[in-house]
Image 1 (cartoon, rainbow, N blue to C red):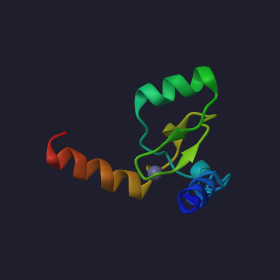
Image 2 (image 1 turned 120 degrees about the vertical axis):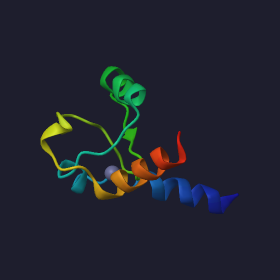
Image 3 (image 1 turned 180 degrees about the vertical axis):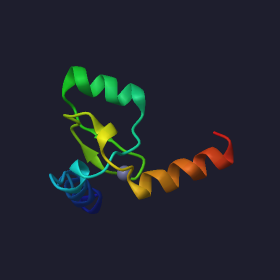
Length: 77
Ligand SMILES: [Zn+2]
């Protein structure tokens, strides 16, 4: 039980303020809309978690998100 608690804390501390500003990540549109209302962080396909605060369209697409997105499309989901 204590191990899962540690994991939870570590995942929370992964709210970096750095590279999410350099890439446009794939995020569920519903999550994005909800985040705009609640201010809660969103989670991208690559696992990146952050509070979106600017238009991502001017950034290059995150290579990890793109890879996952392509594989999801290939599966037909
Ligand atoms: Zn990403």
